Length: 308
Ligand SMILES: O=P(O)(O)O[C@H]1[C@H](O)[C@@H](O)[C@H](OP(=O)(O)O)[C@@H](O)[C@H]1O
Ligand SMILES: [Mg+2]
Ligand SMILES: [Mg+2]
Ligand SMILES: [Mg+2]
Figure 1 (cartoon, rainbow, N blue to C red):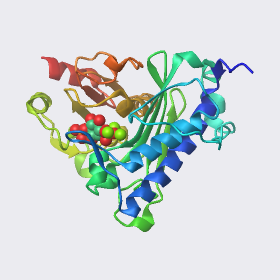
Figure 2 (figure 1 turned 90 degrees about the horizontal axis):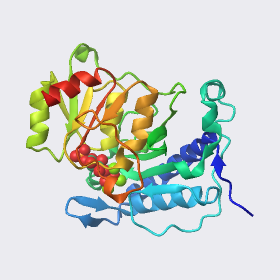
Figure 3 (figure 1 turned 45 degrees about the horizontal axis):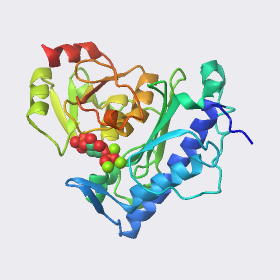
């Protein structure tokens, strides 16, 4: 039987939404068990049992339907054979998808797609018990550009706010297809910060280049947070105006999912010189070597500040 050569983005996104939510169950279970199975991939780069099981679940399940899809996952691991197929019909009755999803997205050549999976973003914080910024990230790119993204936050309450009360960990899913209105995004800007410039950057990898970027932008407030995905979501939800990390550190799997959601709400993600990030399976291109800058508006203003 010959394999299909095209796929419907609504079906692939449906499967990824469900798999991200199921990965959240896996991640919560590992955390609650107390035995994280921490391995160090290199200095300051941990991987846990939760990262592995989450990635195996997502990729193994996608393979039950799309056997030859290009998938780039953060972790190097065997992918088990899984027999349960994820649902592909969750969006078929979604009014906005029916009315706004670009027709070409319903029959995409599989060979031009790459799925980027960060099965657990903010692993370092996860190992330290600071789980509010932990999230599963799935990005779908087409011919080098993000077209759909899914974020699942396992350790948040029904408002999407971090909580240490484990009974409140109902989790939150944010997903987007570029061109379709995004549901569930909140405006989290506090009243005291209206009209101010808030810059968010790394909590654990501050360096001279980051300091130079802060000095160039001169924010009213400097926020520090773990999780590339979490900081991207802070910009998407107006908790920060700009997220900048001007040196190597993040990878394509950290940004592809958030990038698609950002595009869907009118934001921008480039390198600090304003160059587009191209999504590729080339191992040489996986690291964002020049860094990233993420904004919801006024992107060029920040590019000019960083480069003048
Ligand atoms: O999925 P992990 O490995 O937790 O992803 C990392 C990013 O690769 C890394 O860039 C982020 O560094 P900063 O905290 O300095 O922004 C880290 O938080 C995780 O997102
Ligand atoms: Mg990551
Ligand atoms: Mg990760
Ligand atoms: Mg990692």
